[in-house]
Image (cartoon, rainbow, N blue to C red; front, side):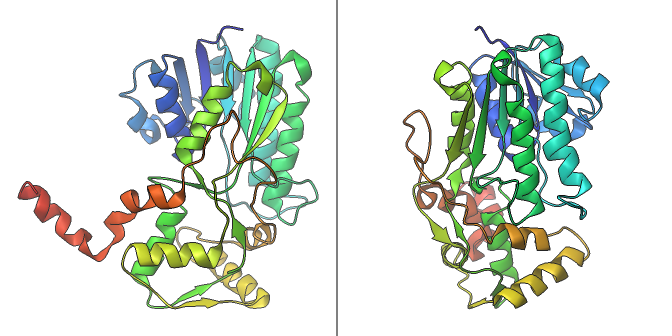
Length: 319
């Protein structure tokens, strides 16, 4: 199997941008579809990378951008959806229908390799619409069988520069004097975005990864309370944390779900947190050693600290 040309679906997002940089750096010819090219302008300087406008949810457009590709990597996903059973329409479109279309188009066009990013603890009988839809998306990928070698990745929550996880906690700590915290005992095993990206790219030409599903985690398990405490102390904004009961956690999630502006949390997120996002075996495949959160987070969370206001002055002074 010789892979030169790769279609990267979801390449303009947080994880996708890191995967795109790795692929480009290794000399692969990369195509990144996006509905609006403006959203992926940060990828335009990458050599061997072509950003094209396309709606991959449309079968004809998906086949157009997939034609001539040796491999397809699907990173598409959403965190929130309108309600539905067993999951809402937004989860269905992104997590289930798209993988089905990718498998069908890849088989039709003779694509040699399929990589798919799901979620840790995806389960058709899981407590949340998110986890149930992710599980059905995995099932769609597995229908490709041996004719289209596939690999599925199930990361825990992913952290790194530009994440919407630790950065959100830092912003909340800077904004509020007290932090009421839903599901404070929910457990996570955060994994560094570069470790996830390398695991994905490394698997491209590894036959031992064909037909495999890999959990991706960092080296340490934390409760949500521990993570928020660590971040607030790291940015020098320690805050009292009030852990909410199950009922109050659900109420907070509902209020945030219907609050104007960007959704910070939904009732479905609350349901997801009832399942620990913790690996059951090795943290990473291919004998890769996972980076510790404490070795990475201080560098990119520094701009949230109280001294950050002085950074522009120091830059002007050359210090």
